[in-house]
Image (cartoon, rainbow, N blue to C red; front, side, top):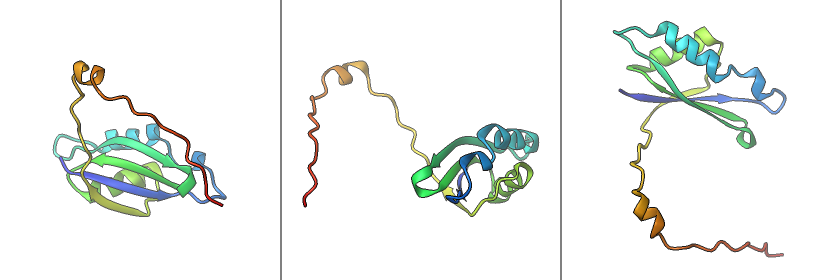
Length: 110
């Protein structure tokens, strides 16, 4: 199933609470979804420092993502096709035998 990443700008004057939450968007996707046109919200990521929220959808078309946005009140600024990674978990022995890594603090230069 194709994936789409929807980007929503959240200005510093508004708050994340003014952007529809995952439950509202997921409900709109479930209402729209049918056997012929399945659409599903996979994940929402809010990046406050960048004033952006990302919504990752599985859908057969960008148009269905835009329809979910319209039904949920989500104002999408950009939608692009995406490919999310699906990684197999490491076997437990690989975790036991991994090398120890030390992280030291980085001092800023003046």
